[in-house]
Amino acid sequence: MTAPKSTKCPTCKGVAVKDGNKLYPFCGERCQLVDLGRWLNEEYRVPSDEPATGPLGTDDESSS
Ligand SMILES: [Zn+2]
Image 1 (cartoon, rainbow, N blue to C red):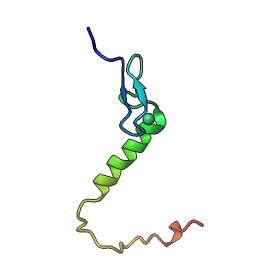
Image 2 (cartoon, rainbow, N blue to C red):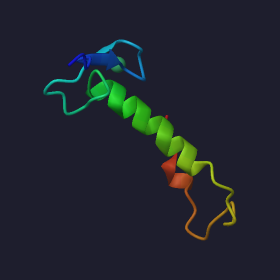
Image 3 (cartoon, protein in one colour):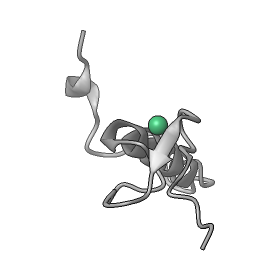
Image 4 (cartoon, protein in one colour):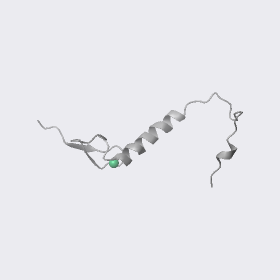
């Protein structure tokens, strides 16, 4: 068989080893999280039909 044991990490384009890598096709946890973050951002970009200002208010969310 000529199946490659490594491939390109979709996040950093580095080498991602397949064998025993539960994070495959990512090279590491960091790259997996980065990709997951991108994916979530896409999800959040859905057209919002909810009011911009909710009754709860998020003013205490300010962090410097
Ligand atoms: Zn990577």
